[in-house]
Image 1 (cartoon, one colour):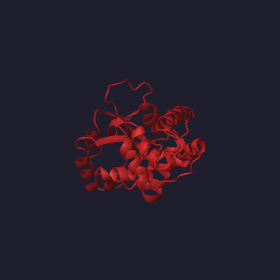
Image 2 (tube, rainbow, N blue to C red):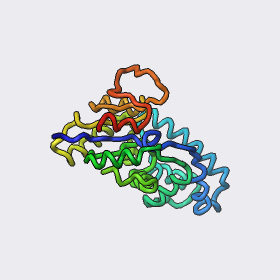
Image 3 (cartoon, rainbow, N blue to C red):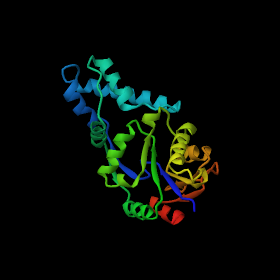
Image 4 (cartoon, one colour):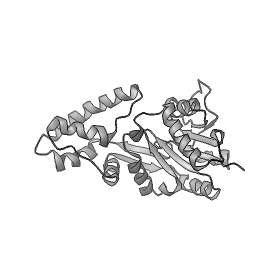
Length: 235
């Protein structure tokens, strides 16, 4: 019997953003590396410029990786050394500026799905690398459930990139050669990136449609209100 395989979006699918403030991560970086080169207001203003730049890249389907691309731009602007970060340091930066919580009932559902031997993966649009996202999930107590985590920061393109989805699908089918694309279900909350991208990559899609919006393109295989409803679809 073939396996059911699940791929999840991350933000607003597995975890809810309670608040985001990039400056709470930027300030310790400034204190350690740039205090003698510029004021915090100056580096904060530059961070806002880079946010606009990131949005323009996203319109082109491109990612703006924090460690690979953004950190060197601060050094170029203010004359500091080009910095790097370990996954642990990157995860700490993310923790400071992005407070998240696991959706109610999710750990219990993931445990049931694991007991059913359903392989699970995460595919996220994020400027932070997969290694940092995995550490974030570990810190929230749910990282153990996923065989692998992928981030657009490592790939260079964002969902709905067909190539990004195909990368994940190819990796999964290499690990599970008895399965095929029809056995994979992608779950996400954002129609334009998650639903559209997964559908165009030939995957079944469970859309978390919390606002009861119309499925204007007819791309969603299933619609659910909460992530925990997924258990009924695959159980």
